Image (cartoon, rainbow, N blue to C red; front, side):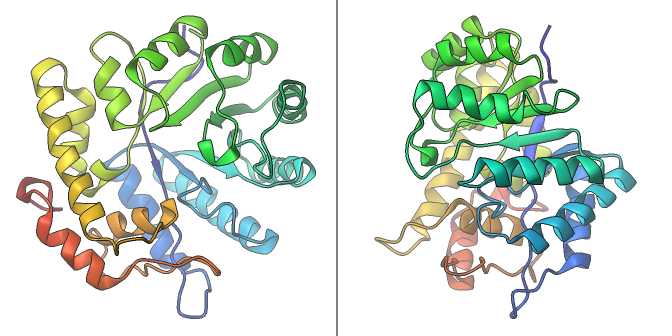
Amino acid sequence: MKRYPAAIVATQVVPWDEHYEFEEDRFRRGVRKHVEHLTRHVYIFGTAGEGYAVDEQQFDRIATVFFDEMQKCGGRAMLGVISLSLATIVDRIARGREMGYREFQISLPSWGPLEDKEIGNFFDGTCGRFPDCQFLHYNNPRTKRVLDADAYAGLALRHPNLVAVKTGGTSSADELQELIAKAPDLQFYPGKTGFAGIRDEHECGWLISLASIHHANARRFFNARGEELAALSKEIDGIREALFNSIDDGVQYLDGAYDKMLYKLHDPDFPLRLLPPYESTTDEMLEKFRRDIPRNWLPGG
């Protein structure tokens, strides 16, 4: 029995005005759109949601608004927590818990790769400190330490409230097979390629990204099997090619820059800007991307 359901999980990106103030009304509309048309499982402050960049005041305000709106529209809110400081991570979890959150997404501190004992200390300080909460670990290579199947097998035994792992694009089908075999209680959330590689054989969730531009097609992909799954996977590859062909050569943007481009296809007035010092993409890039998207994947298509 898995500790967490297999579902589509999606990030909620944050709109900033020209003064880098939070646009609450636009944000609330986005939350409602995700829950009503795509998935109940939405999170904020992962890498795409600028969880690494917000200050404590922004964190508290946006987390409060997000939880409130998710409660109103029947969503299942997850709060991401990213910091170099374990003390800050613990403090943010505690404040989120006071707001009403019971599901958290955590990432390892990224200043340097953690040693095995330090990884144990990190999970003791998060999962172990809040036994009434559930935790999804984002196994992100930006943290400089990607955990393997043996690590998760041990952590799952030690922490029954570690319920899921988001692997994104870091795991091949063979690696996912090993993860599922050695940590069968955990739910895994691969990206498109990993999902398509194992879904005919195993239950798993899906970390949606590129496919979020068309909600109905995304749900088709999640529910597909066999030849239909493979065909839709190739279509999503076309979206990826269009996206990266639209970006200036030699520039590596953070995840949130791409996710805001994807979201802006649904909300034409959505601002692409990221919190400083990070550079955002441009409307010109977005239009180039839009022109090259497979027609059947355009929003409303």
